[in-house]
Image 1 (spheres, rainbow, N blue to C red):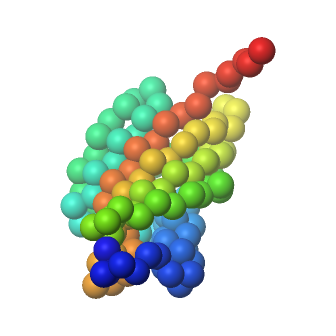
Image 2 (cartoon, rainbow, N blue to C red):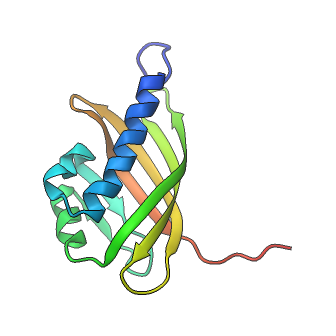
Length: 134
């Protein structure tokens, strides 16, 4: 953390922009912009049926090329800053595959400030299953 300063409004906007950019980069396969979203040493746990752990931007790009998700939405994001400046984000997502029904889930992120701006250092995606409550 920068002294006793917490996240500013500008930090919140920049972090939300990074999370929004993720959707545009991945859905549009705009891989030249991947480093606008991720740190070079990012770790991404994909969740779902494949449950892969990806290491680095190159691994993410290689894995996501050719995937059949045409769009997704990230929403309901909450942020929590740690004393060392690390930011934890929790978001909901809705994904729209080319085939099959939409999927929903949660992103659990670690976001860090870099010289180039806020970047995802870690992301864990959890696909949600239907839940029935009393």
